[in-house]
Length: 225
Image 1: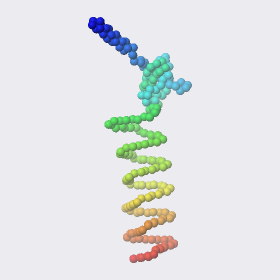
Image 2: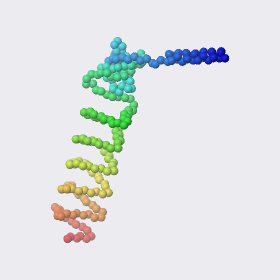
Image 3: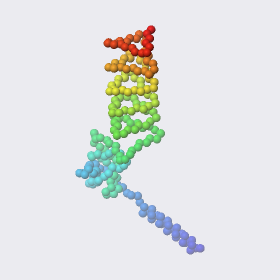
Image 4: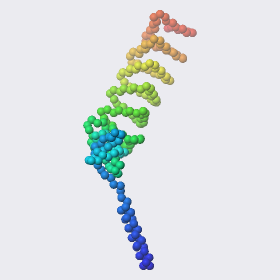
């Protein structure tokens, strides 16, 4: 019985010692921080000059600001040939700031709002999709230029003081068309046609029909008075 207890104690001690040795052996990969000035070699690869070292470096995925030559950068050196640019510390005044990433990018804000503020905002894309439950646009002046514009809506309402349009051709179709003008409604054309399948009615307190050379009325029955 004593031998069995001694064996168990010895086995437990050996197991504890083995686990301790494994913990000592399993160490984290060490890294070395350094600061330097970024430049580029003849092949276009990024070189960081830090003290007497010249290190080939790559931009880390989390460093969205694209480094430029002359920037002071913070780097993490994992191995002699593995150096990552983690952040841009300082750059010369007047240099453009470009946020760049490889692949798809998505900005997600949970239970909050996303605002962009700048003196000028430009969007350039081969395809632009906007999806929203409600959209508001407020501007003093708006210009829109497009080769083709398609607008599909259940209801459209336009309110303004002056409307001016210049078109080569206008084609309009509607099931019901009602127009009210408080003032003068004038149409000027080289050739004007008004056609109705059933009834054509002209009504006014004073009605004037003038033809410079010919006025002609044709019908199965013509009534005046």
